[in-house]
Length: 364
Image 1 (spheres, helix red, strand yellow):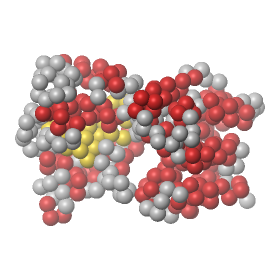
Image 2 (tube, helix red, strand yellow):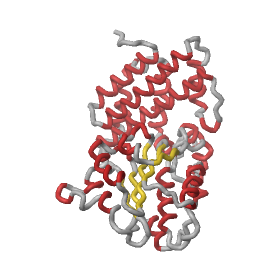
Image 3 (cartoon, helix red, strand yellow):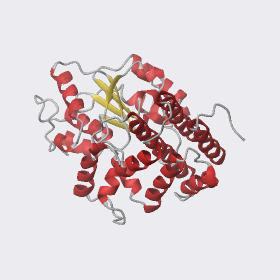
Image 4 (cartoon, helix red, strand yellow):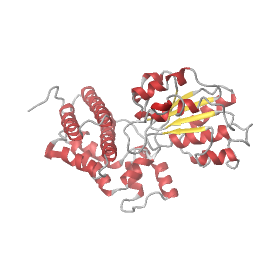
């Protein structure tokens, strides 16, 4: 993949190009932005550029042909270390960072990045899913962050700096990535043919994606697409807990499979949908001018009908919406901590109603 195929991230590319030209590349970067927008792809292309063995004098222009470039693509380069959350785990295991109990600091990312480069001239480590580093995992990186080995580069990939522990944020250069536009999502969906189910038009998936390719793929499941709309409709009533909708949310999670990890990811996705709804509510009541290529026409129409003519105090409503978004983030953290899903969901959806109606305390 060439750089021009990584859509929407020109500012990040130009930033790294300047840093390399001036020989001012930092040792640690934190990439933040919504999931499914190309942060990991960008990180791997950056690694390929830095480990390319042919275009040494052309910053960020890998040849794509040399052994170094080919090994990065195959994830077999001896100087590239890749760490991510295993599919069935709720956190990134400590062993991936500092080795198991019998080999502490003798294995894992922190050990490998400190070794002399084998062939690439530098060591590069990429931690995907950095949102899933717990306190112990983040602290295990502290020595590497404070005293980075010579010619090393560590890239952490997360959704926002607020989701990272202060030990990481304070020692990293932050690089922010914006969501894709809907036309860009549609372009990728069309050109890559990554959607097998054609029950939902690709244009509808792109409109509903919130600029995330991974969300568009998830929504190609008709049940997921329909659940998203039902959730929006419930939230628009300001009483989303009515009609036992908590059971509908739990059913949506359980339909993902028997594994807790799959159900957990579904609940986190449901909260992401809710956050998307609340952000559109803000745009509706503030009458903000937004690029039509970055909003969901269905959601715009729904919030206009529900809130477009409201006489409520805008500032007070904005405060309520902000609290709803915070509550969604809290719910995601509870789910990641493996709290009881049923209680978490029922409390979450009920409290969203209280907050959005302006209630300061639970009502009977």
